[in-house]
Image (tube, rainbow, N blue to C red; front, top):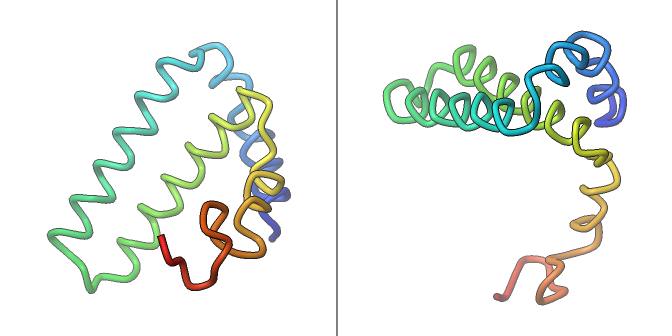
Length: 94
């Protein structure tokens, strides 16, 4: 699945509900999911299934926010396609 396909799938599943909630509350949910990921990394750094699930949740909420704000994540990712966008090196020299 490409990033665009993932974003489209998340839109198909959740967009209406997330649009009703609005960007500020959706952003709050996103931050809460990042917190859950942080807790799993701290408490269970070797439990790949738990980490996989938390990363998926964070990615889904990020995709939802991007969709609500009209940002295509695949396009946004292109900023990093060639190198560090700031110093233009790989690996980064900043």
